[in-house]
Length: 173
Image (cartoon, rainbow, N blue to C red; front, side):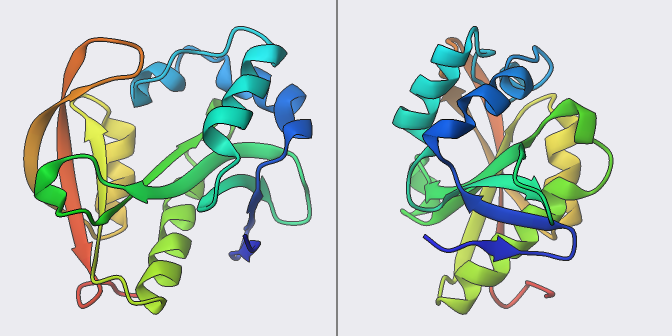
C-alpha cells in the first residue's frame, strides 16, 4: 500500500509498533463511541485493533506531514448497506487534540481523488444520527444525503445512520 500526501498530512500504512501511540488517542471516550466503537482499554487492546482492523489494505494512519505519529485513521471499505450497491465507503476518525483543523476533510478528499482516479463512479460516507462533527466533514467534502437506515454498532445497539454519496462527476477536486 502506498503513502499518500496532502498539503498538511501524510497517510501511511498502520504498523504494529503504532500501538503505544494509538492507545491514548483511541482511549478517548469522545472519539470511538461517536463512530460506534469502544474506547481502547490498554496498549494491548490497541495492538489487537491494529492486527484485526487497521492493518489492512486501504486503511491508513493519518500523520502530520513531516512526522510519523498517528493522529487518526482513514480507510475505504465495501459498503455494508444493500442500497450502496457494493460500492465503497470512506470511514475516518481524528483524535480530539486535532479536531477543528480541517484534517478529516483533507483526508477524505485525498481518498476521493485517489479512488475516482482509479475509476470509482461513486463513493459513500455515513455517520450515526447525532454525530454532527462527522456530518460536517461529509458535507464539506460535497457528499449528498441519500438515505437513512438502522446500523448495528460494534459497541452494541442499533443506531440510525445517515448515508451520503458523491459521484465522480460531482467531485470538485
